[in-house]
Image 1 (cartoon, rainbow, N blue to C red):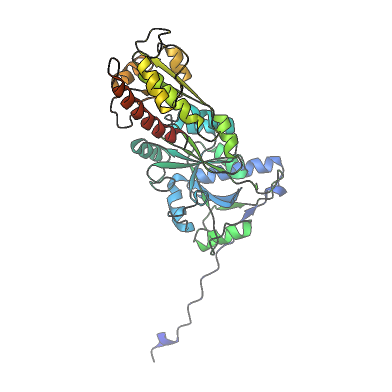
Image 2 (cartoon, rainbow, N blue to C red):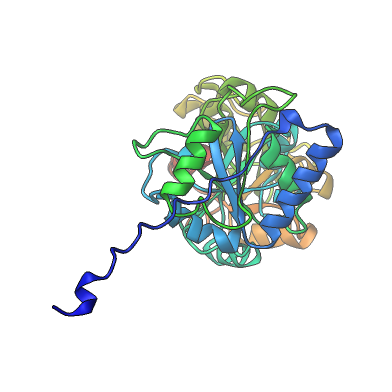
Length: 396
């Protein structure tokens, strides 16, 4: 028999080193600040930390490490629950507004009025800008986005948010942790076990923060999920800490329709939009205006336009024509132009105006002035269809 046949058995691998748990309740104010600073340094160095959120425990990492963390923690990218998916942990609303300058006036107003607060946002961004932003944040495509919407976590719920404020760059990823049964980790021990099972529990420098903070334990209110679409609208996808009615009451929206003389198309659009909004469930307050790029002041809506509106069941506007001015534009959150030429005139007056052609495909709505009543009726029906579509974008 060969001597090697009597070699001793290979010893089992040593158990993983237990993850240290930082119990913030045991620290004084200076100790907690030092722990937060140490955690921020770990994030900047490419490591990750674990701590409590209002949903349970989550791992936090830089964007560059976050892709590996998602795979290690077994967070499936096909999860349907947005609260269980990784998100960019943005330190505050001003960081977000700077990163996504395309957000509209209503969206900005809602975010500023609700922040700081428990919000998960799905922000619609043009693909090229989204790719550029992900590169700036050091985040791989698909980690905190689905190619069209960026998931952003805004909140004020504990240690992880405080650590995010200390980062030199706002590039943190928040990944909810689940146990082997797919349940959210609700305490430090189960979070440590989840990290160990994922192969990340023995990572040098990993720290886990206990929820027992002097200010209270894990927050019990769930975040409200808001969809902010590229058209400037706000949609409450999931009620949570904030209810839908309250959020919409904070929004307020002013829509401006623009044509040439403000006697045919834009006053018809104003009347139709006002009528359609009156049929909707009470929610976001909406003000509707109209003006003309070459309008005089006080001219009446044409009789043919009035007749078309009344046939469709919409009361005509009571005011006379209004010339378009920068002051009128400044009141508007969203501007809809009847033609591409009108949109160009608006941008020449105010390059920052959020103007779109009323037709999403960019087709003009021709001027019916001087045409027979049937053409006015066709125009009114087309306006009704286009406006209904646009209102659905703004207020689903």
